[in-house]
Image 1 (cartoon, helix red, strand yellow):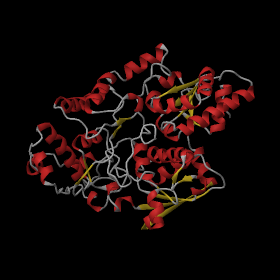
Image 2 (tube, rainbow, N blue to C red; image 1 turned 90 degrees about the vertical axis):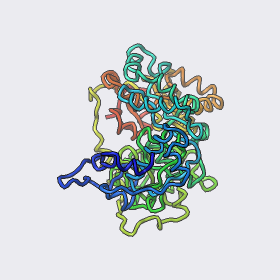
Image 3 (cartoon, one colour; image 1 turned 90 degrees about the horizontal axis):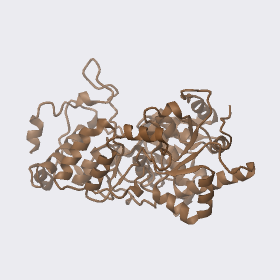
Image 4 (cartoon, rainbow, N blue to C red; image 1 turned 180 degrees about the vertical axis):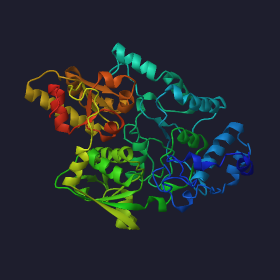
Amino acid sequence: MKRSDMASDPGAYDHIHCDQFGVGEDGKPVAADLTGTGSDGGPKALDRGASQRMTLTQEEQDILDGSQGPVMAKVLKTIVMHGELFGAERLADCGGAPHSSLYTANPYIEPLLEIFEEIADAGLKTFAPYTVNPMGMDMYTVGQDPEKRLMELEGYPLQGRLIQIHTRLGARPLNVWSCACYLPEVGNTAEPGTPVSWAESSAVNYGNSVLGLRVNRMATGMEILCAIAGKVPVFGLLTDEGRKAKWHIDVQLSKEPHWGVLGGAIGMKVVEKVPYISGIDRWIGMEDGKPDGVAVGKLKAMGSATASNGAVGLYHVENVTPEAIEQGRDLLTEEHQTYVIDDAELARIRDSYPNLWNDPDGDPTRVYIGCPHNTYDEVVYWGHKIHRALKKARQEKLAIPVVMAQSVEVRDHFMDEHPVLFRDLRRAGVQYTNICAPAFQGLSGMADIERGVTNSNKARCYTKLRLYDDDDLVDIALTGKVPY
């Protein structure tokens, strides 16, 4: 189908009514400088009344005209319409490998499953084998008792169908399903500057910021369509202008922060604009010009909180992230604003987090660590920390279970390198799983039977889990009590 036919489709370009913040009395979008992609997108994205017409290559036009069949034509038509909505002038070829955030199969996603079944029935696959977010169910560890098993099966009744679709479209095995797809055990990375087809807020955030990839925050499903066609629209964070910082985050803390709280403060302030963060490089170890293994966990925790407490798709860290190393404060726009985060401001943010437990005065029932999924270094850190605490307290068992969430590959790496420690921790009550903790905690009825605690500000933001520092989490795990 030609673009002229697309334009004649009634309502095809009625984009204004799709704005996530609705429309005002004048018929214009409220908060019209937001695109929902992680970047304010530039002036072309502001005029929702007239879409930017995209320039296509002859090959791309031929695909729209049916050269690769009617299903691929529909796939590319959808991508073009999506790009034109946000002012894209062209498409770029995808590099690396895709990453999908279509990972939980609630009943309401059935229409999306039908779309991808049609694509799979046409014999189409993604341009490269891809990774997927972790599932919200694990009936072997955290959800093995009957009550939780039923919650999982009732909450995600289409999960088997979803796995089948991903398998047909070219997904990699379940052992690498992880929101931290970029870790070396999973290996879904690419060279800086590569346009990739990823969805998942923390993966997009880390990929853009630390790896220097180019990807917008796409709605679930769009990343698979782009991966089928091997094309992504160029706008927002795929452009040099869209990667400029409109906020300078001046961190003036007297000690190393809780990285999730710091990220939460940034996300709530800048929403989805790009921040340039200074003052934290003193706590970020570098190796060969890149963050070391420990630093990866810190940046992952901070970045995921900017993406969940706000909608940040890209941040720059002075002297740390690749574009900040190369361009420094030239990344800041002339009209940028400044936000100072000192000890008092960080404490104010931390104190604002509510206790959402159904029984606010109840005792905790479980500790959740690993949202986003743990790195190998984090699993080792927590393993030694918990083991030392048990020995000091002369306890063989934890009072409540500790859920350590990571990909199967990361768990196996830890098990291979520290087999005795792995054995002892499992016997003590540490549960190693590859679940998505928020998706598991979000199951209907879970909040009625669990009062969970976590060190993840992303998990806190999406669930009723309460946020604590690492040392407090260990004390809670040993005693089954929260510090008041």
